[in-house]
Image (cartoon, rainbow over all chains, first blue to last red; front, side, top):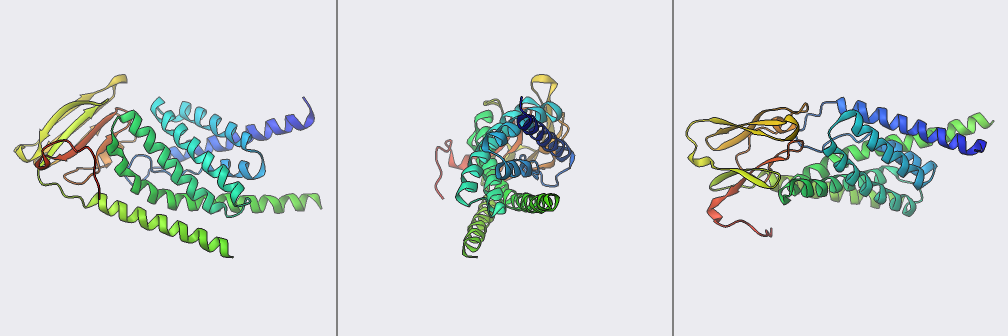
Length: 172
Length: 127
């Protein structure tokens, strides 16, 4: 293994760890709204950062590792299914949007990602519950997705900005 | 910047649609309430809520020792307690009208209220 690939491996492992910690802590935060599927989605910040700073493949690996390990740590097998379908749809949407928007306006990318995550979860719920009635949750999920997506997007944006600054300072 | 403005506009439009959608779901009135409790696509109970005189409880068991305790009251229905740690189905409270079902994802239990005035099962709906 070359020096570079080892560094890359360790970076991805670190990102997975950070995402996992965020994911596990977030699962402990009680949410006042009694609708299944509403959450902050802070772990999405990591996916966004890797999409911007590294490649889509890296982001996908970290996302899958986070979902897999996160399910082991927090919950039931059912939630794995919801997370994967939501996470995958969110990932594809964000990947396309980031290329379209030239890695700018991350807050918007994040909002669309959150909405797609909710849609993916709803589709998974329809399949698991064998009922279309779950669709009626979608407006509420979209509301929460807009708000939490904006928040996580702004977090990612400011992290990317400050990381650039820190890199410039260390090079001087 | 022009592009930022367009993106903000798109976000606002999505937000407004979400609010309208939520409002429509919450304010859907039902004339004759019948609660249907399902698990794994099997209907376990069909209760005419307008016929209920005294409140009573039902218990539904699922795989892995999961359970939900359902409280049936005159005109409304709720999950009183459950085995899952997050208690989301309990926090959803009582439903008496509207489209919103009570869902317990871990136990695959779903409670919905249908309007029996419309007689047959609804195939499609157009607003």
